[in-house]
Image (cartoon, rainbow, N blue to C red; front, side, top):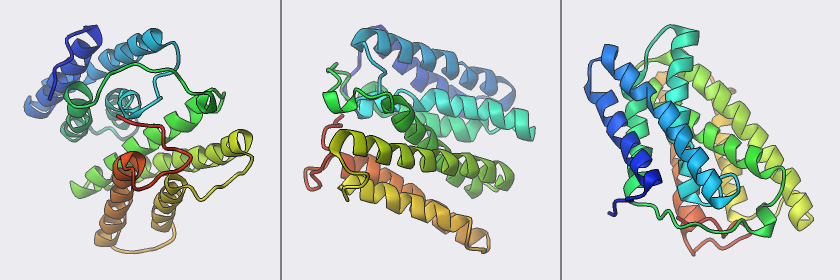
Length: 242
């Protein structure tokens, strides 16, 4: 574990602290503390963007930069649409992603490789990051009995993951001359999509929904970590390290 001592590192550490306080403090106070992650996280993204000169989505560190503010924004949107606060749950998820961002992942800067210099780069990657955050959130909400917010989070997540998958196919054809290469990451992305698609077609009880949401979240975690980083799965996407 390493502490990043620059300005970006201070912002990342602040997100960890704010997420932890959002979990621990009473809801009336915690919602304001956790809500502060939104401007802090957006500032961190802007700072990194200015430093590297491209949208910060090149590797796992930069992709994770988007997750804490996404989750904080989802908290506010859920309160606006559903009239309920999901502060402690979202803050817990925020803590889980903010901690490795601040203390585990390397913040080393790098150039954007030619294959990523496309107008589709931002919507494709951001679509996946938004979808993954919302899918993880849907599972957590379902676990604590917040069925209505869970369904809304799932619906938006599925919409985004579908769009990201389609954009990836178009981008693949532009970059590599084929819409689908059966690359390991492509296969796991498709498998993840199929799991979540099943939730809209298989009618079942809450345990069934929880099981499918859990399998989908497991597929996301494997795609982001093991498939993305392991040398056992070389492919067209073997450029996104920590």
